Length: 262
Image (cartoon, rainbow, N blue to C red; front, side, top):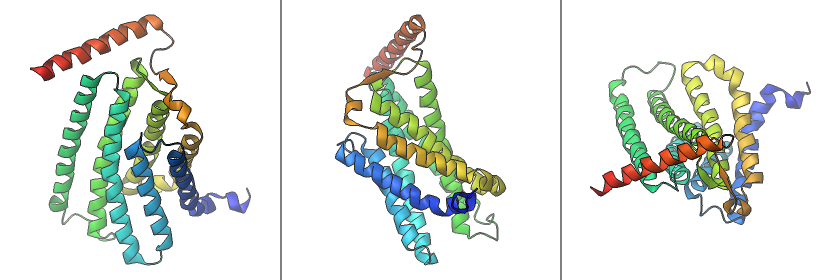
């Protein structure tokens, strides 16, 4: 294998490649006027690009690098919550009562998870490994907890879309499916970095490559025409089952609408 294609060299170059791919996607969203349609997705990508660029510039200044890391990861964590809510809104746009129920569930559960995870800052104040700074250990634990819950909700909406015949814009389907893969790669990396660092070294190349592939595919696929074209997600192979599931989905939405009006 040529030296420039080695895993070690790729890991060294990967942040710069990912930054370039993110900037191209951000520019593409602006040019195609999709940044105002998928606002939190755009904000998340922009925040990620700013953090990565700043980290690359100031990586030799350990204190400033740490401040950039905490500020960047904290900001992206908040934006990721809004991305999840945005995904639920898009996926359930045709069923407003169900969308409202799903978004409220996400908000309440993530708020509770944040409180429980934040309590670990006090409960685990003496549990941090001596080899790692306590603030880094606790922040990583908080971030891991929040990412796990957000990933769970992303997987839930993915299963929902694969089962029920949901009609939505093609861009929306590409955005949701891509972000699940993108966030999964990031979350698995964070989990392995804390639980099994040895496994992280083996899968790090694959995970960051998956993120870069998602960025490239989004740049190519997210186009203005995708806002006019629609697609149906689940059970397209079985029209009878699709009709039955659509009726069930409409019934659930109607029931939730009645409950909300009481």
